[in-house]
Each structure stands twice: as C-alpha cells, then as structure tokens.
Length: 345
Image 1 (cartoon, rainbow, N blue to C red):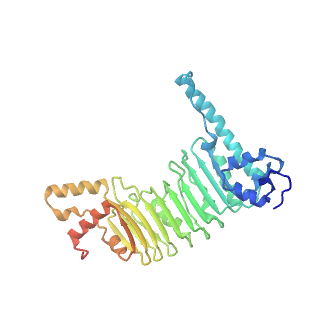
Image 2: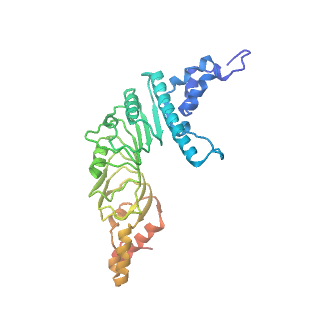
Image 3: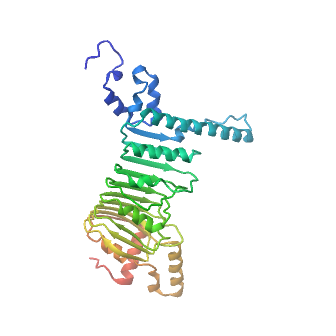
C-alpha cells in the first residue's frame, strides 16, 4: 500500500479492517479511539462486537489517608452512584449510535447497581438486532426471571449466563434452533430439574454444554438427553449436605466429558458410546461421608457403599483418554471391594 507522505499508516487502512481490529477491544477502549482523528470519531459504532464491563467504569482510585473512614465511605457511595449512571448512559449511547446495524457479540458484565429496567431493554435491543453470541455475567439482587425472548432467539449460536444472585431462569417455551454452545454458571432454575430439561429440549443442534456450580441435589431427576452433544462439562457443588437422587445421560455422540459431582443414588441411563476423553471427579457428599463413618464404627464393611456409581463407571469403560481424581479412585476401590466389578490384570 502506498500512503505517500502520510505517517498515519493505521488510519489509512480500510474501515472494515479497522472495525475488525477494534472488535478485539472492550467497548470503552474502542470508543476512546474516537478522539484520535475525524475519521475515527464514529468508527467504533460499526464494530460488530460489544463488550461492556462496569468494573472498567467503576474505578474509584486509591484512598486518601487524610480522609476519615466515614467520609471515605460516603464518598465511595456518591462516586459509585455517579459512575453507575455514567456506565448506563454510555451503554445507551453506544446502542443508540449503532441503531439497528448487524451485531455479532454482546457481552455484559455487571457487579454494581445498574437499573434492571435498562438491562432488560439492552438485552431485548440486541436480540432484535440478531445477535449470535450473547454473554450475560451479572451479580445483582434481581429476584425476577430473565427475559423469555432470550430462549426464543432465532439467531443465537452461543449463549453464556452467569447470574450468581439473580435473576433466575423460568422457561415455558424454548426455541433456539441455531444454538451450538450453552454455558450456564451459578444459575437457579425456577422449576429445578424440569427447567433444565425444558431448556435443553429446545436446543436441537447443541454441541457443547457447560454447567458450572449447578446444584442437582434439590432435584428428583435430572437428564441430559442430546444426541447432537459432543462436549459436556459439569461442575457440581460437591461440598454439600446432600447428593443427587437420579442422574441420566443419553449422549451417544459425546466425545469429551469433564464431570465433577457428588455420587448420585443412581445413574438410570448412561450412554457414552462415542466418548474419547473423560475427566471424572466423583466425591461423597457430607451425608454420605457421615454414613460411611457410621458404617465403619459398626464394623459393617458392606455398609460403606453408601451410593452406587457402577453404571457411570461402566459407561466410560471404552474411553481412550481417562483422568480420575483421587476421590474417584476411592469410589472405584469401594466398588471393587463391594461388587468385584473389574478384573485387574
């Protein structure tokens, strides 16, 4: 490329390439380029990826030692309110500036006081624009459910939800015909296992499923039944009082499994016909540990088998790459001594 005497080589690049470069920055950083030159003023408005993080805006700086604790706390509260308003206005302005242009990714990370009504408006707006990658990471005291339109999107290919304190998921109708990746972290379902099963039933081509810190022990029955699924990661709350009652896997095309959980009372269905690699971390719940100690004190060794992971272990017997945690090995040894399941050469 011939730029003549121009020293600004970057500005000489095509707008489409500049927008592609800006798409790798968070939206605040991309917006800051608008002060570089006239050409850059509204360039970030054409970026197809939006990444909003309120922690970038809510930087209060270091505390002045001369300020008392009470005054400092008051100053923080006032400053936090101002920055929260500034953050919300910034998101509104960017979305307004972009209008209805096509949008690929929308990421929203919130840790502070942000108006719930405005959050819902943002979500609905990007869904209308045909977003294909939606990531919501929100730790708010939000007692209502997520907008139902999230689960009726015709365009979503990837969906990540991380909402530790709220909102929860309450789904009646689910239709996600293009969704291939679903990542759920610390999310509560209004109808427990039924809610998860309903959500998965509307994901007809799902290939990757990540469930992290989802407590199954409160549910009578949980089933992951997806013939299209290729990768499954589940990280349960193993250090809990109770263990899951019944867990079922009907995933004949699964090739990768990472599974951490307390041992269920039963595994009614285990279909891992295509499994290549598995990482298994089975542990006992607090109740199971207590039952084991009680059985040991009574001298009844058979009573040590407080839960049966036989079906799950047998379901991965044809795997090519296997990683077992120390806790899982203890479970296997317990199975060996109780049931003579395996012949060890």
